[in-house]
Image (cartoon, rainbow over all chains, first blue to last red; front, side, top):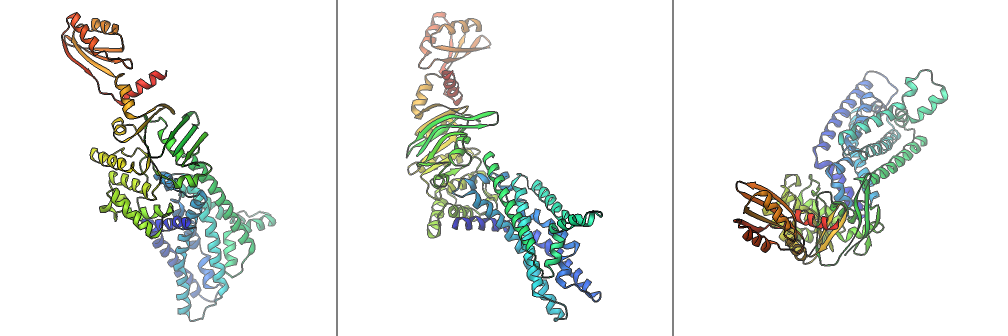
Length: 251
Length: 310
């Protein structure tokens, strides 16, 4: 356990050793800040049925930033170790492969969580300023941030898998960006394909991140989404572990 | 300390290590000598559990490197070729991380970091990021990392490659000192380096062991089988023909230099042909300008050993 925490500590710190973390944090804050401004102006336009959290998390701007952030967080996790050759120093220390994979994954997930923490402040400020005049429900916050965590867990795993496939960070970023975008748009197929049978449209809808967000941001916690993201995360991580072992032995 | 039995590593299309067997006893400093691509690094990577062997067995301190790899790695300090380091960390930070990873904690870790910083003369750069260090310093950081958990065995892959002559001397002295307390296996392709530091040399080529002996014995065996340089005033054709007749001469190449013939000789093992050459020159009334035995180079070692193999 101590060994695992040492590995995890190094992974988390490695984000803050490099300027990447600060650049990503800065621009992510800029983006979410603008998104917050846009969603508040939407509420100001007149009477509406949506809460501020629904307005915030169901915009194109949010999804755009959301999809873009995973390649940036995960691209260097494994690729850089292979490129720098540090994988050899790492794996000849008495550490298990699984510990290394989990430490890298959780380190990236931790940074993703750090990325979202400042956004909580927006809602604190919003409710202080609006003095309770806006609709508000605790469940919406729990649901939204739970879904952010679930989707993050899955997409970070996808990013780690992409990074384990190559020694080039850029290639890792492109692979994970394409994979995550495809996953994301497969959920939109129902909107794109007009003459889809209702049954199929229903099935596709269950994979749709946008539909998940639509429900979770109302405070409706759908167990099907929990199972979907949970199993997919596990599967992708297991695959990453296999790829990592395979590549290590061929290195 | 190290047991290697019938170790083989095959990549698609070629065999890097071919049925290798050797032992290293506690307290030895063993030099692993061979040209590039001989299989030195591959063998060391298998010993350090970084890659699995295709067949055969290897053990460190009694622990199999494949089935008991974590235990084996605990007893090992390994410095990979080209010394990969996390360049974004500071020296002391990196050593603290590596120490903790290898199971050294708390006050003991602090003590060990102090010790290895001093041992490897890194005190003055311990606050610097590794990215700002020169090659020589990085090499020593790699060595400090290998030493941090006081392993029984050190495996160093080309510890002096890319260093300037002063740094090479420093690292060599350091290794010789470490040899008093650790068992060491180091690889190199520089013969003098091995002669100065190692108690035993294993020469490998094309994945096989070609020789395994003390540097003194090896040098002795090879010196007598070395080359001779012989410069006489004689026609190149007649000089070549006559020299070939001398018993013990294996190969002659002759180059003309005005009226002189510059002859390079390769001799059989154990043969010293210099006296015969002098008599020959005296008989034929050739003037002699030079008659010297060439210093043994690694090339001679290989030529000698690979030819006697064939």
